[in-house]
Length: 42
Image (cartoon, rainbow, N blue to C red; front, side, top):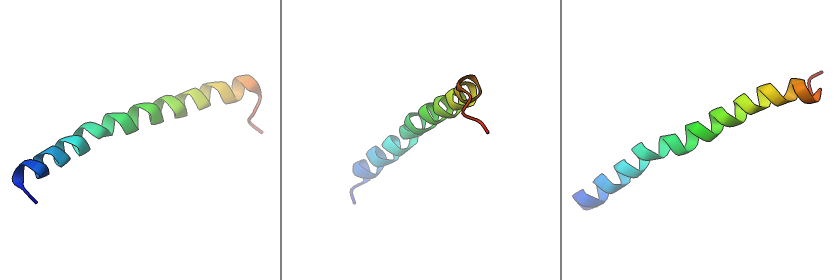
């Protein structure tokens, strides 16, 4: 693997965390708010 290819893949991985964490947090937070509102909790 060439050095510049390695740097590009590391940058994609490093920058990709926001694409995973932000929707996950919004989804879990939204679920915590909407489930009691809609009466989905037992």
